[in-house]
Length: 195
Image (tube, rainbow, N blue to C red; front, side, top):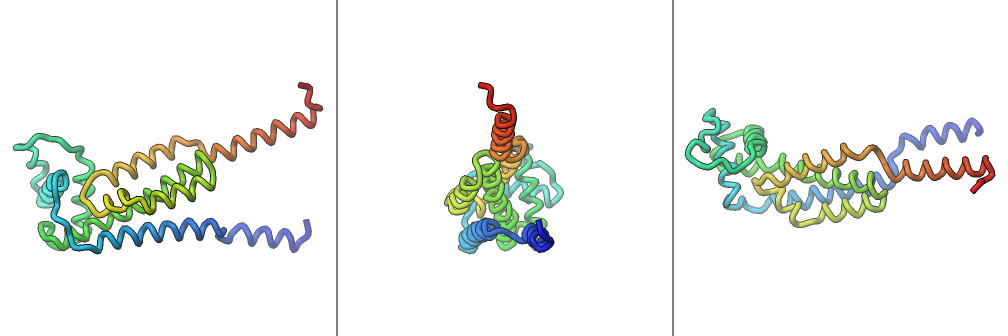
């Protein structure tokens, strides 16, 4: 390898690849879709949202879990804690609509993180094409985009569940399998393939 070739290979390693820009573009489009849905007027909370919001406001007001002293405990505590933190970050009066409206922004960030996590999981299990397909599908999936603007536990659960699954995958399995096949082929050539 000449000095110039070595210098070029070092430079090329630090530059983003076209697939990086494609992935970043998909994530930006996913973020834009979620912001577009969020920019609609604040919806009237219903069903589970009412309970989550009430408990989060109680937590912020220092009343703890008092909601459940006179009501059956039906929800896991993590999402009300997350929502209380989101309301706190939103600032202003937590009982007001404006703070509640801004409190959806961390959920939107989680939803975009979901797109990235699911794409990474698809890549680890099935390769680069699956990663792009998963990113496009989850980025544009109306259910994922809508839940980002709702005060529901699904987005937080999906983030934690997908991150957990990704932690269980020991690297890029497909690459490892390909490397093992290559090593096996190399060994067979060296030994003269005695089969």
